[in-house]
Amino acid sequence: MTRVFNFSAGPAALPEPVLRQAAEEMLDWHGAGCGVMEMSHRGKEFTSIIERAESDLRELMAIPHNYRVLFLQGGATQQFAQIPMNLLAGGSADYLVTGAWSQKAYKEAQRVAAGGLGGRVRLAGSTEAAGFTRTVRADELQLDAQAAYFHLCTNETIHGIEIGDDGLPASVAPIVADMSSHILSRAVDVSRYGLIYAGAQKNIGPSGLVIVIVRDDLLGRAGSLTPTVMDYKVMADHGSVLNTPPTYGIYIAGLVFQWLKAQGGVAAIERANVEKARLLYDFIDASGFYRNEVEAGCRSRMNVPFLLRDETLNEAFLSGARVAGLTQLKGHKSVGGMRASIYNAMPLEGVRALVDYMRDFAARNG
Image (cartoon, rainbow, N blue to C red; front, side):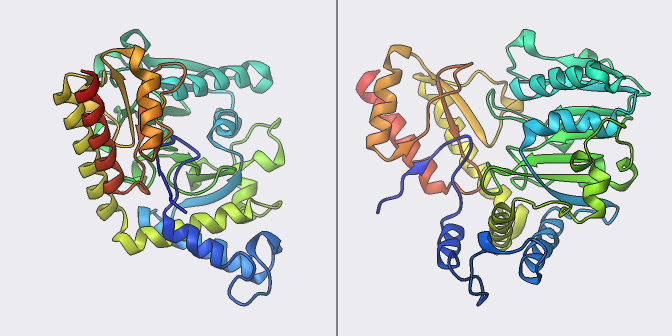
């Protein structure tokens, strides 16, 4: 079997050692006589799995004690509704729109508020007029000092925009961040956020699992119409097992956390990610054949969209890439072109192979 270099934006590639360990444990987890998918979510075996997963995640992200870690069903898109249900409480919320995902979150929050929850959802700033090619500037922000929370997406998967801790707007409201596509790829000061959420299928594990890291003081604010299973406090009080959680997804996430620790933790994986991103962006910028339209200081390390100088060559580029063992490079339908997602599990060798192919394709078609 020959594995390809999979540049999918999600569900994305997983570390090969994680997949091999999961395969070895598929029929019998640590002598239990059954696999993780067959275990009771309340049994001692699975309890040990979820407890270790939380402990390792807390260590990797240096999560303070006054934050709860929730392993929930669904994905980040479900959180677009669940967040205002839990935090809006009839007040106002500010939303920053820097790409497709933060725009979806903003529209969904408006829908939830108008549907009976009450409160007001404000557009605090947007870069749509700039084609989502940069982050917002300070003079473009209009923040409500009384807002219940301030929502942003710190890595826009489709448009390739990233906001690190040093680029956070100066909000006095608790910051709520969608980190789905770059969580665990770089150092994050969790204490600067009120709530962090992330769908698992990019840097953590399989789809169907979402992780929520929420500060204690933000629990217990859910509106009366919030379903019990969507109430953060209820789920926190029950250790994420009020109902059956996505057990296998949590197990795989736990293996990924162990793999990350074996690599040297987040600091080590961040250094690798910086090297991968620099290699690809430097080649694109110098090529004259490809281009990335995002302002240099706002570029994502995880998701690299790029365009060919002659877009009639797109299909030939993708066809040749597949032959070379480089897959899932087609850009999102809303922006076109190409996109290379180079998450934690993508080795440097994969990015080198992509650059070599891009160089050869440009030489043959330039």
